[in-house]
Length: 191
View 1 (spheres, rainbow, N blue to C red):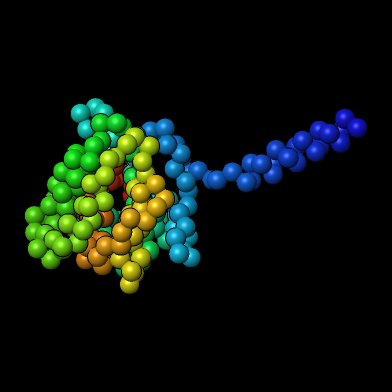
View 2 (view 1 turned 135 degrees about the vertical axis):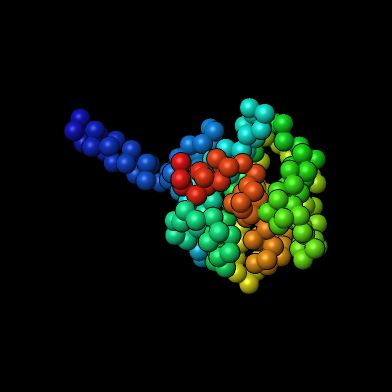
């Protein structure tokens, strides 16, 4: 009887562990899933890191792609399903600060010329108008012929732009002038 109970308990433990979501790594206290599913596409975690400023960790950013890649430019220009997730880990991030930092990122990624995507940038920035709290998660999912799907805490908030807009958006983290160099390296799986 004791062997049967032990074997049964072992089977339950194994079944329970198989039912748990798979996490590739823990970054800044955030369990970052190793895959991202969207509209029939299974993306894999390319890399993730923490965005810091003034010695404070602000958010964990993860990059999901169809196949692992370590070249930033190929990610930026690829017309294929991709996603960037942002897990807010600081109460210091406010709507105003996120808006300002994102605008600075767009300017850096485009060399200051937003003329071709200004309407899309304005539309995208509206997502940050409502209060942002520690624990919020933003998913920025690019799908060819659909554009960038913007989710907050799993709820779709908007669909913005096309490939041109996606290049600028992903360029915030992956361009030659990224939001943070070591975050870029981590998202590219180089660290």
